[in-house]
Image (spheres, rainbow, N blue to C red):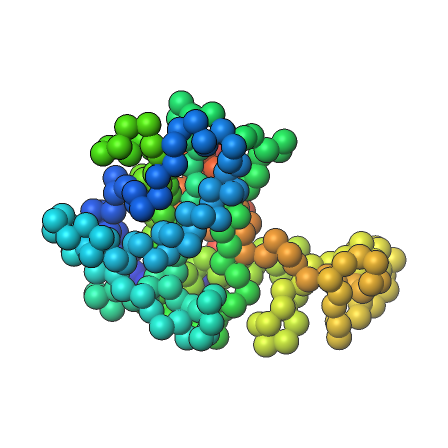
Length: 267
């Protein structure tokens, strides 16, 4: 198990964020009849950018509600220096938070239904590694939201925060990387590109042949022993039990068992 932020600090952080639960981000208002033209993934794309900007600014968006001033989040400069800079926020208690959103299906609303149930698309990408995580400060903030009728505008629906999950980033990346390595995958470069065994690589292992670990491909047709893991870091694929329990709680697809830091399962 890695060194990480304490459970007491996690609880203090969550207590500060408790005013977010029930908050409606009504900058976006969608007529109920129009929702039938949307798929959940389309809503997620729109809401993702909106939430990222709005959450630390709720006290300015709703100045008459003094609760949001106590949340304590502000935008972090991002040590990676680009749009995907890590982390997303800093907190006035000294913590740093990386935001991920969890879409929860709305109730009593007709929307387009994808042919197959999709796992949550949010991910803890390869840009977040042991190189830039501060174990005693960094928190994975998973905000569950649902489209609900705007309390001030009948017939219109807006993103509504229904729960806030907080998890140690150091534990999440340790579990994520454990899954990669335990399945025969590896990192290329200094924690730069995660790659999984290709069909050719698996066949070589079965035949007792040596793998080429000097290079990787992006698709099977390139004939490499390893291919870049295009699903790396998706929330369902991080075998950290508290995170998977949170996904299950909100009806998302989740992993029912894992091996980090020791074997576990969710009944």
